[in-house]
Length: 88
Image (cartoon, rainbow, N blue to C red):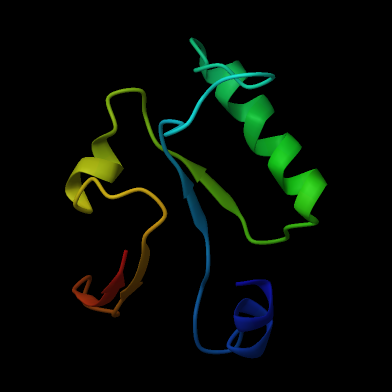
């Protein structure tokens, strides 16, 4: 994703939406606070050297619900706000 973001930086914006952890456990149990969720996201960014901005979904999963509820999905949204492409 990083290479695509760099390649198309002049015509597209890339970001990750951080939703509820689908496989929480071990060192990363399901967070109960916004700070906990943000901490997980920071760890991810640091461990994988990710530069794509992260948008945090709310605890009710509003963004994930609107986008179909699938984890690990990729969406391309056109300038009119329509989903032009979706991959699960």
